[in-house]
Amino acid sequence: MEKETSSSQQMHICPNCGQSIPKAAIKCMHCKAWLKNPQPSSLRNEEDVVQANEQEKEGTAKTVSGGGFVARLNDYMGNTSPVDLNWKSLFTDVFKSHTTAEAEEIFISGTPTTTPLLKDVSRSWPHPWLYSRVLLMFSIAFFLLKICCEVFKNENAIFGLIFVGAFAVPISIMILFVEVNAFRNISIYKVLKMFFIGGCASLTLTLLLYEFVDVEELDFTAAITIGVVEEIGKGAIIYYFLKQLNHKYILCGMLIGATIGAGFSALESAGYVLSSGAAEGWDDLLATMFVRGVTAPAGHETWSAIVGAALAIGAKANGNQLSINVVTNKAFLRLAVLPIVLHGLWDSPLNQSLLTVVGLTILVWVIVLILVNMGLSEVEELGANENMPDSQPAS
Image (cartoon, rainbow, N blue to C red; front, side, top):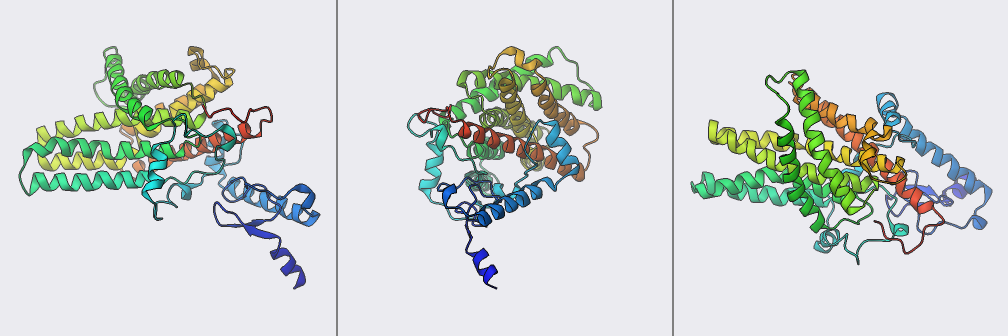
């Protein structure tokens, strides 16, 4: 009984996730957060250290227990850390109460005065929530415009409805990647510039590439061809902005890619919705908008996020240099092929059931979460670099 009391006194609560952890731990084995004030090694007794090591191993074992396909995918992507699919982190803070000041703090990040130093960048799993509020805002606006159209028969509100409906989910996903970017080094102004200019540029380049490609019947070969053309079109613009901003971290690459993919997706969806409404009427306009919105999380936003991460990883393997020869780098190619395959499968005749849609959605987010894991490992490596100047910004 005395031993149990002594053991319980050696535990304390992680300030990040609230789970019980050993007093000697310097990193939470549940949420992977580094403790701000770890107990000095000179004050730790041997039993504390043994218990901390055992629980750290137990926490690691839980992440590896995914095994099977996920573990093989993790290895293929070049992640040297155990599989750590922290699904809950994307939703745990969504249903919590947040202040306007918290939202504004996210929106003002990325400026010279609000970008944290590398030593201050969070190493813990992100807990995004603002994206849900942005989606709610768009949903309320859409509902009000729908009333204008259906109740008051105001045709002038139709284009507003199409705009809001087509942009709602892509922009919400873009904000999610803003929150996931632990470096907080890309401002909302830059994000919006990439969304509109990058989205339009990638759409223009893709249409230019289609001038050299003949796609008629949408069979499996044509679907893969579409995947190649559109991912190259977006990838070229992602490369441009990644090089211009000089943010070669994985999480930054994901944000840049997701932002350009979101712009592409929103503009494409608006076109599909408008065409559907003109050809088939109001009900088909709403149905097309609904389908495009619901399936957006498995589309251009996430495919392009993978491309952005692939470019950042390729640059790192290329001596931390983002040059055109990155596209021949094996680390880049192994990742860049994934969105092409996912895009091809999405457009192919194989994707004809809800089960396939759900399966492809889960698969793309497994890849995204593995990349987040790799991005956080990169943050840890930067933080562990003893030669890193304290004044170095996260750029």
